[in-house]
Image (cartoon, rainbow, N blue to C red; front, side, top):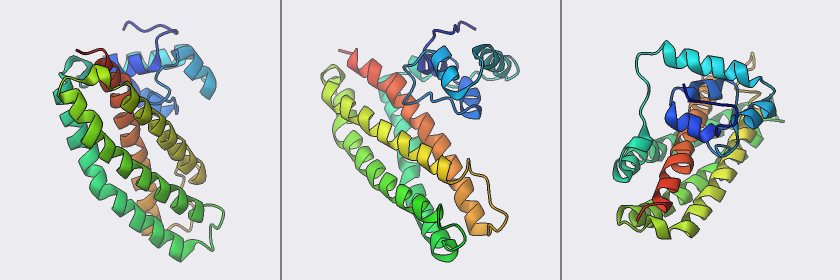
Length: 224
């Protein structure tokens, strides 16, 4: 395992996809914060680098498959993967989660007035942002990359990265509002489904942003 304390978090996630399990476990930002050295990322969340390195090594050595190395695939295949595995599922998941958030807020806002309205508001803003973001990628940026103009896409990439930062901040806010997705005792089935859905949504969006920020965008800008 060729990882040091100065290796960038995004590079670790790219070269060793299974490391993202460890990063997620310790809330280490490997998508928007992928440009930071591992030592700095670990310091930010209060964990020893050696502990994280040991856990990554264990993940790699005890798992049969290494995970997909998307830095070794063509840009066309990577874009297709992002569309199929992340964009299209969000077409269904965003409205489903909004409906759940509205239902839980409508029924239980009096039980959690400090959190449920904030969760709904934050999610609604994030949904709008993501839908606009994906449309811009599909109509402008991805076609540029696929037509061999990736090296000319500095401005669109910069816009997408800024929007990723905003989405990352919204995910962090949702985690704070849900108390790390810890269910209150009075939670009904819909409440439980919302928490489970939001946590899975966070995981998928982190992976989605990682593939773009740390693999697709840098490679596209260096192409041509």
